[in-house]
Image 1: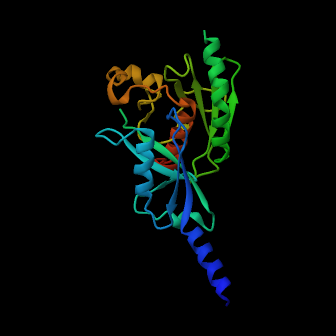
Image 2: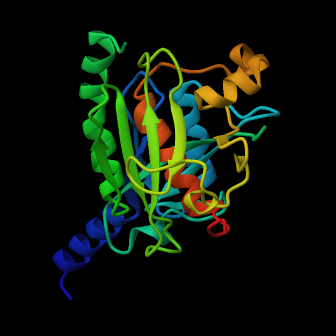
Image 3: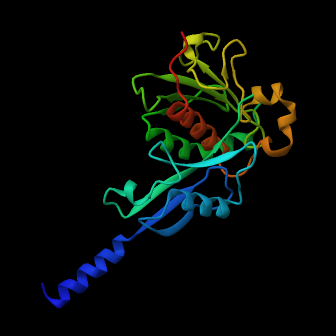
Length: 100
Length: 145
C-alpha cells in the first residue's frame, strides 16, 4: 500500500465517521433540522438538538421521540447502526400524546 | 361549509401526506365532501390488516379534524372491528381521545388551552397522518372483535 493509498483510506474513513442527519417535524413552522453527526452519536443527542431547533421540549404531559422507517428509536441507539452503509439518515420527530 | 382558504391550504399540505403514507403502503383518498379525506392505513407489524380513517377538516389549519375509523370507505364508524386496539381509541364513544381530534376537544375542553391546545403551525394534516401511523406502528394491539 502506497503512501497515497493510506491517505485516501484515511480520507474515506473520515468521511464515513459522519452522517448527514435530517430531522423533520410536521408541526414546525420552519425547515428541517440538519447536521453532520458522528456515527457513534446516540440518537438522544440528535433528538435533543432537533428539539432545540424546533423550539419544543418534553414536559410532564408530552414526550418527543425520533422515528426512522416507522420505528421508534431509543435514545442509546448509535445512529451509525441505522445507516447500513448510507451516508445520510432522515428521522421524523414525533410528539407522544397522552390519552384521555 | 368548508371555506376556500381551508381547501386551498389542504391542497398545499396534502402532497406531503401522500408521500408519507406511501412509505407504509398507505393511501390518501379525497372524499366528494370538501375537506374530507380517507386514510388507508396498515400497521407495520400486521401489513395485511387495513384500516380506514376518515379525517374531516372544517377549518384548516386552525381547528382539529374529526377523525374516526370506518369499516370501509364511506362505511360505518360504529363497528368495533373497524377500530384498531390502541390506547385512547374508544369503542362506544367512537373517538380518539387524544389532543388531536375534534371529538377529543369536546370531551376535554380543558385541552383547548395550555400544553394540549391545537397547534396550527407547520403541516397539521401531516402530523395527524403521522400520529395515526405511529400509533399503528408502536401502540397497536390488534383489531377489535
